[in-house]
Image (cartoon, rainbow, N blue to C red):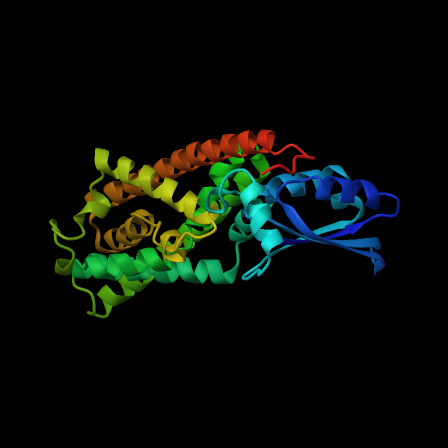
Length: 316
């Protein structure tokens, strides 16, 4: 269940209540007349089945609450109520499949902020991937994938392409470019300094690496894996019960390729430089394409469910 708290401007409360009480997925409606001070108005509380939450939020926005009031959403961990169970049964669809689009957009926008935390995680992940290249260690590749925070901006690009939000695409692309440029530069300097001090030996990056060579040798499987990973990553962002680890593992070979790129540049392995850049671009492209398609399917599913959720339909 989702808990919604709305501040309703004076004169709109009755029509908002009519819309809420007529919705099959809404229950536990509470009105606190005149409780809100800034912005002023009545406070309306209700519990909503997750699969109905997006439609209810859209209705509240049409009543003008986004511009002249407030809409706040909280995830309810536990509800002991037969009325809530009945609302979940009445609401079309299933909560695990539901997408709350305003919430998704807010999460994606937060993930595209070029913060020091984002840069630190991406740099540390790239450096770890560079060490993985030197040691031919698939375990360190997995560690770099876990640390990499770049899927958020990639998913934002997919979202922006689907809904034609060009400004958000530019912001996400800028975050990716700056983040990877800094991460590669720091890893390059550290590798170069390590070689200068005798810590890193050129021979430690052999021409053939059976365990991690895939990060600089893209093939048809690279794009296929990126597409599957991109779809899984988007589902992890939109699903209510998807494991958090799904989202953090969707680096595929973006961060590993960036780490290999930095080390190969520092050690003069130009053939691996070209392969790493190509692998990075293929994976970003594959994940963006998969993200657009996955979000489109989910958007169409949401629209179909909303058509089945007619206000005033209380029948189960």
